[in-house]
Image (cartoon, helix red, strand yellow):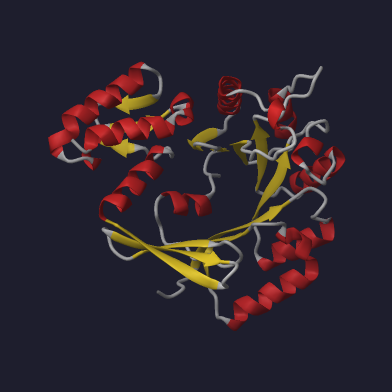
Length: 319
């Protein structure tokens, strides 16, 4: 493999925006040292948390080529930030959003749902989304909080039904205001979806470096290599994915994105059963199924139970 002009570049994991001037100088030198080249249509994203990006730093990152920011807001209600162990304040969130809005930057906002319940207070998540929209983000990533057993507020985590209802409310609200749901957790204005993330979902070649990084390199239609950076041993571990395993991954990833599945993705021997399954999902409002083209894509209600739907699909497809 060789590095052709990069179509996307993503600086994430941790808070690279804290790197400041020394970081931009290092990266500029590093890119030149390895003769890294970029596509004219490069999408260059950097993660940033409130309080970590100053106006003077923003100009340096933009000069380097960053043209998209992903901001870890998580909640726009100051009562919930301490429960998530966030070090930023609501005022710092407003400051970074105002900066990006005034600079007319392309940026995404991370929002967390399914947060611990606070006694005597009910979270108005739609009000938070509405307030965030005032800053004109081009993209929202909406994640359901997942915790381990040692999480100090685990007893206050809402049940699955409550989280599902909250997810559906947020999905509906965002779509009503012009944000298209193009993946389970991602919503974007027209032509503003994350091209970098989509490369993972359509199994395009992705090179990753850094702690716990994961890269994916297609070797053929039937075989691919996934590698991981093992932090403890300071080496790469390799995993070859082929045959049925690769096809399963391809189906799963298509199902979780708006590209969806085609009836022709399955062998003719099972297409009748798969078609019946697709039609039943549409009747139950889990999916939209276009009979003329054989194209199926999940709706928000279906995304919630996508693992269950995939299991049912595989049961039929393997007959």
